[in-house]
Amino acid sequence: MSSKLDSIADCEIDTSKKFKYIQIKVKDRDSGDHKLIVRGYSHCGFHSDILDEIKEKETGNFQFTCPGGGRIEVNEAEKSIFVYGYSQSYGQPDHSKSVEIIKKKYPNWNVTFSNDVHVTSINPGTNEHSVYRLSPVKNYKATKGLRFFPLPEQAVEGLKVALVNCQRPAKQLQHEADQMTEKLNQRRFPASPKEVQAARREIVGKIRLKENNDEMMPLEMLDQKIQKAHDNYLQKEVQKKLKKTRFNWKALEFGKSEEAAAFSLSRLAPYFAEVKKVLSEFERNGFKPETILDYGGGCGSAFWAVREQWGDDFQEYCFIDTNDLITQFAMDIMRVWK
Ligand SMILES: C[S@@+](CC[C@H](N)C(=O)[O-])C[C@H]1O[C@@H](n2cnc3c(N)ncnc32)[C@H](O)[C@@H]1O
Image (cartoon, rainbow, N blue to C red; front, side):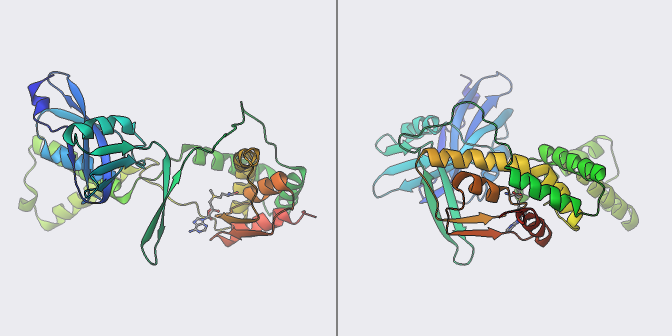
């Protein structure tokens, strides 16, 4: 392995209680050698901050990529380190590899990991955090193969009635629903504000570098009007480059009931199939709810999946959505329910 790589420590983590960490693959661009290292700091709010930090610090001809991230919990008194969780930006790495690396630096510590999924809930009022570890269900029986979950007849009937009452011709509604499907298929998880900022900085840096190479006059020597025009140009360029779905993520907004109708026509059946698949796994493993909270109920697909799974055998169904138009449309579909 190249000695240049040796200059980068394999493991650098805080010993404070709990913090984010990432695995980083470092490649020496000159020799092509590479190695995996671990970094975790409590001062980094986002996983991407950790990667930014090493990129800024290590100025050699290295390439840094991140196979995934998670969290580390350190108990100094007990000399234990627990590695778990995942990063929204980079996904979950194989934590066992991180443990191997950490153990070399902390040979007398008890270093363990879990590749289970953890869900963190935060109460914005009290800022209290709770972490639930989702372990595999005992004797879990997964449904084998793909199954087809068609919309129940009553839902189809309800959707038809609600669509007919809508002011749009059927053809146009279908066209809008197809466009919605296309748009949603292209959407990716939104980039965090930090990631957008980082992308912005990178683009501005590249434009400035190009300008310097083109031997532009220094900005401070230009008059105010030209400086302003230059700033506008920069802003436009950045916007243009960030206009990829991930960096340009906007919540769907329904301003008219027809938009809620197109959304329902596009999404009711696929969302129903997704929820139904999950609920059927619950039932196979002996779970049956008494009350249901449908948060972000949208066009009501979960409602129909619950009804098909457990009939009317539940005490309460609580449907919450911030958009009145889609809630209204979901109710219009449900009206056929007898
Ligand atoms: C993916 S869609 C709906 C999925 C739903 N299962 C369906 O059948 O359509 C997400 C929904 O969440 C709603 N929503 C967005 N932000 C919300 C919030 N803060 N609280 C409650 N609902 C929200 C949106 O109006 C939208 O209807």
